[in-house]
Image (cartoon, rainbow, N blue to C red):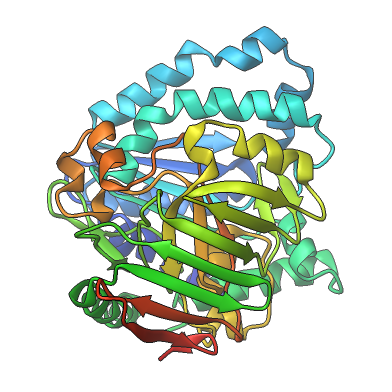
Length: 410
C-alpha cells in the first residue's frame, strides 16, 4: 500500500474514534478486530489514547483458529462457553466500555464447517453475549461497527481482480462509503446525520399504524407499535454522548409490532451469516410468525437460525434505505451486512432495540414484548429493497400515504 493509503487509514481511524464512539477522557475502549488488521488496530489504539482514553483493550480475532475450535474442540466444552469469556464481558460492562467492532472476515469462512457444530457454537456465544447485547441494544454504551479489507473478502467482492488489486479496490470503497475521501470527514458525517434525522423526524410525526411493502416476490404488511420511534444515523448513550452505531449508514429504522406481520417477502441480496452464505431467501409471515422460509443455498443454516428461540421467527427491525444511496448505486454486492443493508431496505429477524419505542429503555423484557417489541437472542438483518419497491404508510384510520416509490423516498 502506498503513502496515500497510510494517510487515508489514519483519517479513517481518527473518524472511527471521534465520530464512531466519541471517545472522552477516562473512557475504556474495546477494539474487536482480526489479527491481520494490526495496522488499523494500532492507529485506533493511538487515537483513543490521544483523546484521553484510560485504557484500550484489543480483542483479537482469527477465523482460522475459530474454525479449528468449532470443528475439533470437545462438544461439551463447545456448547457451554468458557467462564473467562463471561468474565471478560463482565469487565467491559463494569467499565462502560465503548466498543469498536471491525468487520473484515471472509463471509464464507465457515462454509465447510459442520452446521450442527456451528449452530452449537453460535448458541453458546449467544448466551455468553446476552448481557452485552442487551446493553448494546439499549444504547447504554457507545458502540460502532466498521469494516476493513481482507484478501478473502476482497476476492469475493472483486473476483476478476488479482488479490492485491481486489484489496485495494475494497479499501477504496470502504473509505468512500465512510466519507474518508471527503476534505473534512467529520463535517461530512455531521451533514449526513442531519439529513437522516430529518427523515426520521417526519416518520415520527406521522406515527403510521403499519407499512405495506410491494415488489416482485414481496407483498408484506408490517404493523408498527404505538409510540414507536424512528432513528437515523447518530444515537446517544445513557450519558447523552452521541455515537454512530454503523459506519457507513444510510438507513432510518424502527421496531415493528411483532404480532402484526403478514404476507410474503423475498430477499434481494445474499446474506452472509455465521461464516456461511444464504441466497435467494423467501419468508411467509402470519400473525407475526414465520410460517415458511426457503433458501436456494443455506437452507439448513436458515432452519437452525429460525429455531434459536421463540423470537427468532419474528422481526425486530424495519429499516428504510433509498435505492439511489451511494452504496446501492455502486452496483457492488459486498456480501457483508454492514454494507449491503445500507444499499437496501431491510428487515431483521429477532430482537428489537428497546429505544425504538417511547420509554422502551426503561422497560423490562416482558413489558417490551407486551408493547410489541420482539425479544430474541438473535438480530439478523436481511435485504429486501430494490428499485422496484413501493412502500405505503397506513394511518390508524386506514388511509394510505406513499413513503417509497420505485425504491426512493416519495
